[in-house]
Amino acid sequence: MPKLTWIQHKFERHYKKHALKKEQQFYQNMLRGNDYRGTDVIFNQNTLGWLIVIVTVFLQLISLATTFEGSKVYFGGVNLPFGLSAPLLFALAIQLVVFCMSHTIRRHFKMWLVLIMCMSTLCSTYFSYIGIYNHINSPVDYLEERYKQIYGSMTEEYQLIRDQSENDMKSYVFDIFSEVDKSYSALTKQVVENEALSKKLDGIKIETGKINAQTNALRKPNINNYGDNLDQYYADMAKYNAAVGNMITDTTKQDATLKNELYEQEVQAILGGQTKDAFIEASIETKTTQEQIGKLVVSMYNLIQEQQEGVLGEEGKILKVEEQIAAIQDYVLDFILTGKGNRNIFSTVLTNFHTQVVALKGEGTLPKFKQDLNHYLILADKEASIMKPLEEVMTSGVTEEDAMQLYTQMQSELKSAAYILNQTKVLENPIDLTSPSYVMHNLYVLPIKNLLDPGAQRAMAWFCLAFAVLIDGLTLLFALMQGREKTPLFAKSNKDIVGKSKEAIEELLIATLMAGDTESKEGERLQNMLIQLKYFLGQFELIPEGIESGYSMWCPLSKLDKYSGFVAILCQFNLGSILTREEMYKHRGLENLTEEQYVLIKTKFVIWANQKMSDLALKLEYIQNLHELEQDYLLEGDSI
Image 1 (cartoon, rainbow, N blue to C red):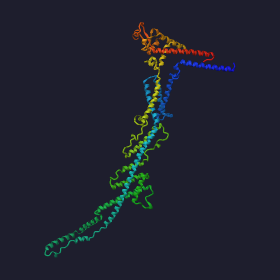
Image 2 (image 1 turned 90 degrees about the vertical axis):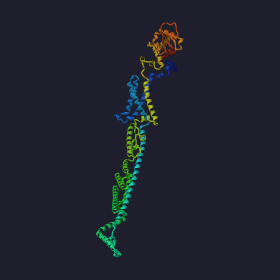
Image 3 (image 1 turned 90 degrees about the horizontal axis):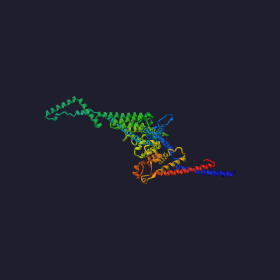
């Protein structure tokens, strides 16, 4: 054969082969019918089963991820051997229980399995909600933001207290040292004045001439002055002699008394009416107080100079007491303003000077000094910041697994700061860590709290919960939707047998009709099915009277002995009915019937049967054409 002819023959054979296969495919598709030309090749029962398994696994993986995220907060700090993750193991355990229970309970329905599945599902939903919520609202971010807010509020309160305490102490310092300095100056001046007055008192002299003058004040009676009245003269002389006698007798005594009286008059003139004893007592007290203050100032000055260069001032001169008071005041103020100096010396100096002021002014002077001093010293012992800043509390790389540990550390800082502030007892309202301004909610209850409390977070919390319920709900629905098919032996209704599928009823009818045909091939089986349906309908007659009720054809039951199973199925699914002769006459108006039972079938069954016979006839034609194509193809020397 020439080469060109051989190639042409090859092309012709290939073209015929392609055309035959295409025509063959057409008849095969026609044989499958409309039900199998579309998506049923993919979306059938087996595919649905695998789809459910795959979708369930995907949903379980999503639920596993969210449950794992949610359990980090609770079990992140649990240390397991071999580096195992407690949150991951917990999430795996929960999801495995849900997956296994949901696929087991549809085949083995038991209450304890239902209880386990419900508990595990609730647990999965809760932790999934926590995981979704924490993914949207990170607990680490919450702790960071809340700590910043509380840190700012407490630091501000603490700084106000410190500033107030410093101002109070500066006020005390000015008042105390001003009083000491003023008192010492006044006492020193008084001491000088008292010394001058003492010198004046020491210079008082009482002359005896003043006493003689008192004696000379008695005049001796002169007889010349009496004339003839000698009796009076003698009487006055008697008095004179008696007075002179008395003066002579008590000369010493009278001289001392007079001298004292004159001295007292001089003292009072010098002291402005004050007695010498009172003056001496006051002078001693003034001198003693002045010396006490001086000694106190010197001792305190020497005390503060232990940390300085010496007691002497410039040019090697010893400082005056007033200068020492000023130096001590500068030291105390410098300690308050800069913190330089010794805390104990500062406390000792202020306490001693305060005691001295109280001694000078009385017990009511500066009544709150000791309390305020202790308060100030407590604050001075503390650091400038009452709490650690966020940078020291929260290190870099903190994850959700470390969130509870970070929460505990932050709570410790807050409690310590609140205790310090409350101990000062100067706040109008003590710090309450449960108040909205200072509360830092526990991470375990925060997502639940946001579900209940009104606010901006409530809508987001409910959205997260709905999403978690949706994931686990879909997981259960997909797992349980394809339950085990119920056997007709235990069916309680028609729905339990065929469900809601119309095709299932048709398949059941065909299976019942062809129950005895087990050896026929496909074409022969279709032929037998067509014959059986045609013969079955051929036994029935029309009932015009029953068309309105849906029953349009009837037949004696005795003619359908070989179709008793098929008739039973028709009656079971309300496609047929069996009546007696009396019922046929009463309800259908049929007369002259023999005494037996009759079968009525509905119009819709007749319609279906005719459509089925038409389909069967068409399929038989397609099969015949397909066989002819196969024969033609075999004659060409090839096989399909």
